[in-house]
Length: 227
Image (tube, rainbow, N blue to C red):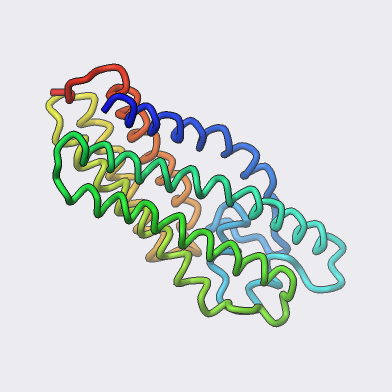
């Protein structure tokens, strides 16, 4: 069991190690400011029409358009190892819970963690195709499906992890469980109104993952479940 939890910790710190290069690769501004989305990548992920893409990257005569496209592509390429890492982190977290309890429900959540990464990979391929043809916006009709499959899968995982932490007897884990559940709630708020609250989704996800990582660190050093 300890080895399984240590694997969770390794992938958790892998998320931290990759977060900087991934976030640093994406452009910091869009042609038309969209403060509700926060980082431009969220506005790109939520795009529904070619007009939305022009608002992000600018018209053809915008001198910053090629740089924004190149930065967005670079960020999305960095995102492939990142998505594999966070997906395996969540899947292994629930796999460890299953190994410790034999409750098959945890295997369902492990599969949802893997689903998040798969949806993210398809989403990235759509985004990379769109930057090569902003006017045609190929497969943009499928973008929303993949984006929300990813975010809702993450929301389910961090909320389920939060519920498990909340069920522990120690106050620390209860507090972290509440934080993880609140993180899931922010993703739901972002889902309902991304143009106004999209910026919350990154923070909510981070909150849930930190709670899960701290619990995994504890379980890596102590054999017994916290009580």
